[in-house]
Length: 407
Ligand SMILES: *Cc1c(COP(=O)(O)O)cnc(C)c1O
Image 1 (spheres, rainbow, N blue to C red):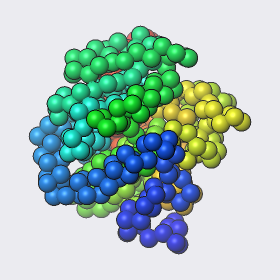
Image 2 (cartoon, rainbow, N blue to C red):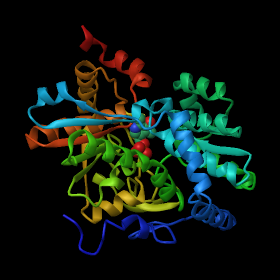
Image 3 (spheres, rainbow, N blue to C red):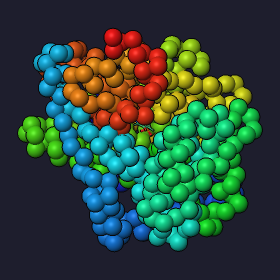
């Protein structure tokens, strides 16, 4: 299973390289005027974030503000329904604000504070990243500008209200299709003008170096906790670890702790409603190598290098690329990347709610759906699934479209 040239016991020490490469993926494709600033952030990450003062401050924040450690939970009723294989959930839905995203937003916010920045900048699509970052900004007393397409603003009224309540400025983006792609451009343009006093906070293990590494490291608390909890609960390691993959931050967070263990690892991409272009967002499954948003990875794009349209019932998963480290771990053969469709995720959403009293985010439901399939195939053993978030945000949509299942 392990690639002969890679020693996973020391893998994170050597990956990424100093220039931010995981194999041939990653790097930093940024305008020349930002190179010095990105070098400064990289340098600060190596010195500040690894200082005992930063680490102990982040540890206190995680405990007292976020409510960490989140528990690991044995799904007995779900496991019994499927057979003998035992399913466990890492409960990131119980992290403050209801998902794993706050793990890296608090890390990025704390680094911005140490760097003397006054403002956090980001774009958001469905609003989840915007809400998590606005929460971090409120905690640290920083300003926060969130760029959001006008179409998304109209669709995501509750998240827009949350961001404003948390003190963020929601900046409407009114050109092009007025959605995430335009919001990314607008946020980056604004950042270019005010990078001296602000920090651009990327919402997953994507973007130019050092963000894929920083976000991975801030999320790795998930896997470290889960591995320890699982060992304590069962005396063993799980046979398999499963997580959904949009950009790949919750997956990277739980995978890292298990890379050097005899554990099968699965990342689950959204298959949406089909395998045709525009019907899914399964970047690693159907994409090819390219450069987008400042990094090289596997992506869904047309001949001109423009991002393909993507779709998933889970808005947190509909990204046309994937973190460069996932592309590398796939090539190494260390992580298996699979898919789950909208229908499978919706089934898992209803099943977990009813059998365990846990309403998962539709994103997380993709991982649970694949784990349910895998449990039947394995017949025995154990699977640890990252439940990346709670599903309250998805209720209105699910009830409108699938409400007749409740009758
Ligand atoms: C945003 C989000 C995801 C997808 O992001 P990753 O970077 O792939 O983890 C998954 N689950 C939830 C609950 C989210 O909010």
